[in-house]
Structures are given as structure tokens and as C-alpha cells.
Image (cartoon, rainbow, N blue to C red):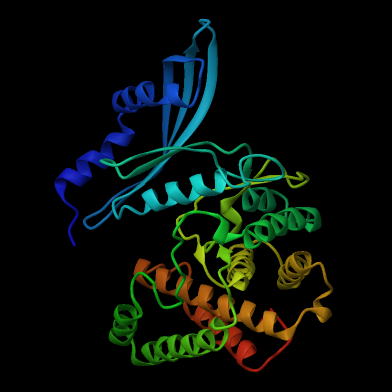
Length: 355
């Protein structure tokens, strides 16, 4: 569906300095008791997509404000907006987690501020530090053991939340509830190439079959849904705490999805920087840290479920690149990886790595 001109104009206001100052002057006193007025604001867009069918903005506001004593204070605020309205759900989910154990301490979520309905925009306080992946790619020779333990500590805490004790209706994850839908992308793959279409068609059927096999054994466990290295914010790789951002996809589902998604994304994002041997080692260390067990002692069913979601994640990346027509990242290797991960899951193979 074509994006309306009204929606385009409303979301575009997020990169207008006067509009940002006006909104923040009205809203910030609720969150900062000493706030009087903004003195200066520097605006930096990180995402600024204004397409025919969608708009996606991520903007940083570096703010100096005058407090009630006349002194200058500095704060850093981000806003994330999407024309599909998904950031409202992200705001609500972040707020629930913030108020239920993730406000402070070792494992936190980004501090939510407010949601602006007309702009479909979620405002939040900038997390201290940089992405785990950014630190890692600066020096690929560093020991990631400590960082992996902290990261798995955060996701373990999420997986242990008593969802029945929280008054919130969480969505339920479905492996085939994707955008674009399987019906659309399978058809488009066939239109591009019959062999390609057959590969993706078989993959979707295989993933659905394995998912149904495991789903009945899983309770109401909260999962992050998009657990990858760029959503993890740390002060440095020696830090013993972290903050997570982007809760758009959080839902009830299989906790092994978070493990499978993370290690496959780490694999895909890291393969241009480090050797296959190093990637495989880091992936195994991550899984061992989550379970606090040697890999050989982890139940094969968990490994199968991790591989199911490695397969699903690789397929999703291939679909994204297919529509991007990204020649620098051909999808053949991703599809082959997806097929191999699924075979590992089907055949009870005690491995999380493919060649």
C-alpha cells in the first residue's frame, strides 16, 4: 500500500530541529525533574528512509538543557519511527521490561520515554557505550569469553521472567508469520528462477515441519526475537553489564530461537572479519555460556532447536538480500547454510556449525 502524503510529512518532522525542540520542551519535564528548557540541540539521522510504501527513521538528539538552577546539563535521546506503527509495540514492551527488573543493575533495557502517535515514533534515552559487534570488529583478536558470558546472562534473565506475573498480553511467535509472507516470497523466488523457488519452497516446508515437532513442548517463555550483535550495547568488551535496545520482536516462543538467531547472525556478520575456525569457536563458547555446560553435555534436542532457528535466520537474511538485489552479498551461500542447518536439526547431529 502506498504511503500517504500526510504520514510522510508527519514522520519527516522528526528531522526538523524546531519540531524536535518544541516536542522535547513539552515532554522532558515529566522525565527530568530539574528540566527548564532546551538550550541547544544537535540532530543526527541514522536511518532516513522515506519510500513509496514505508518510512523508517532513527534520529539522535544531542541536547543541552538549562535546569532549574540555571546550569547546563547534557542528555542524549534517540527516536525510532516506522510507518507500520510497530514502534508503539516496541515502546510498550520496553516499558514493561523496564518496570519489571530491567531498569538497573547488570542487565538492563534502554530507558523508554514516550510514544508520539502522529509521528509513529518511540523516544528513548541513548544507551551508554557501543554495539558489541562494533567493538568486536575493531579488534577481532580479542578474547570474547567474558563478553559472551555477560550477553548470555542477559538473555537467560529474560527467558526466566514469570510472564504470568506481568499484566501484559505478549504476542506469540510463529515461525511462518513473516514479512513478506511465505506465500509472497516463494512465488517471487519461483518467478526469478525455478531452482531457486524450489529451494525456498522446500526450506519453508521443512522449517514448518520441525517447528511443529518442537512447539508443543515449549511453555510461555519470553524471547527477544531479534537477538543479534548490533542490538547489544556495552561500554567495552570487558564490561560486566549491558543494555539492550529494539524490542519490536519480543514475544512468547522458544528460547532456543534467541540462541540460534544470535550465533547465525554473528556468523554471517563476522565471516568477513575472522576465520571460519574462530567463528565456530565463538559460537560454541556462546552456547556453552548460556547452558553453563560443555557442549558435549548439552541435550541434543536443544541443539536441534538451535539449528532450526539458525536455518530460519539464514533463510530470512537470504530473503532480505533477494529483495535488495544485493550483488555484494549473493544469497546462494545463505540458502545453502539454511539447508545444512535444517539437515543438522532433522538428523540429530551434535553440531551447530556447517562448512
